[in-house]
Image 1 (cartoon, one colour):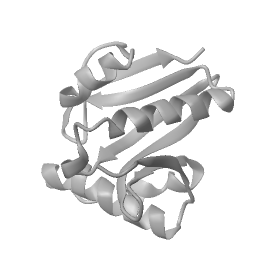
Image 2 (tube, rainbow, N blue to C red):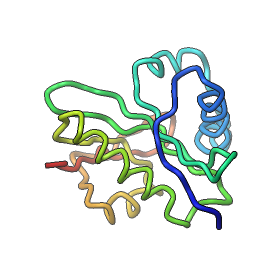
Image 3 (tube, rainbow, N blue to C red):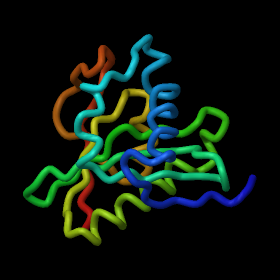
Image 4 (cartoon, rainbow, N blue to C red):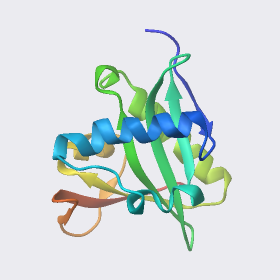
Length: 146
């Protein structure tokens, strides 16, 4: 496998448009859902962290500042053929380092049930009860960054 580069991409750039397509393919299409303009209304005010293998975007995650030291990781997606190769972990580690550098203390996220083990391996803990989001079970998870 070629070297994977992880870094920030600009909102409304070519890479951003690629990331919307990736998020649709990985997160929405399997559920029979489509991204709408309303789903992406906050994208402009979030940090976009992408993984690429040269010219191809293979992973994405968004960070939304919440205040009071909290930042939310969301829309984590890795292209199917690249899953299980450590790319998701690289994205999360970059995001944690980036968020810490901005002064955030706690990363939170809403994990799909199928992703619980992935986040638990990265030291995220379930907070509260299971809930439904976009029609499927999720769990709120947190990790102290400092």
